[in-house]
Length: 220
Image (cartoon, rainbow, N blue to C red; front, top):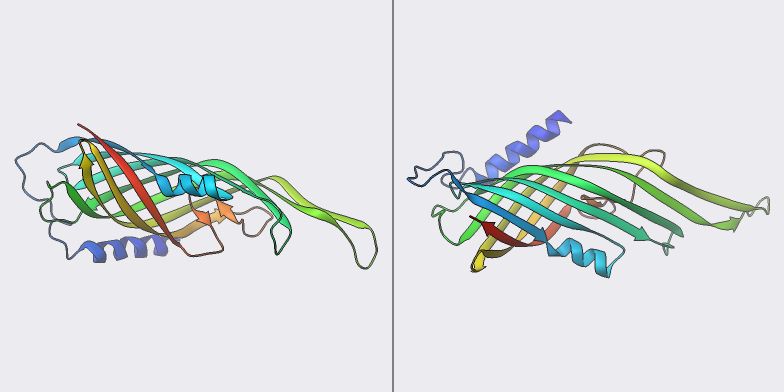
């Protein structure tokens, strides 16, 4: 686990090491504190509305020198996946999640109205899952069989590498895309073995990459 976390940090440093000012604070006559920003992700909300899983998320970041952006992300993840076509299982969960991290502006001209950034996140969630299977007839004994778990307690901690861009569109409003690579650090899926959806992390049967479209409001 510790080796993995160190590897992720090392990869982030290599990614941004060639960008001027990433590892060395640029001299600046402006004050360190440049304001706060609140933001939300539209992709997760669209997944929630259009599909059977997703999340509502908000974030608060601090702007230091227009170069460093410590950030806290808080969200509510939810999944309701009834009658899977292959397995016949129904899966549901709903829980909050939290991420803490920092973004670094990679652009040399850091006071401009656009940003290109790399970042790192540490995420965690505690959640409960319900899994049910429609009763079926045992082919050998001929009686009805029921399967399910209710309120199974699980948790997960993970790391994320973030790479994104955003730009000012009107007044204090900014918009932009970000791509994230996620990796589990440690977890407990209870008796299930591997939960299908983890709040804040996403589904575990697909890619480790995720995309976000952020609306950001600067607060000076």
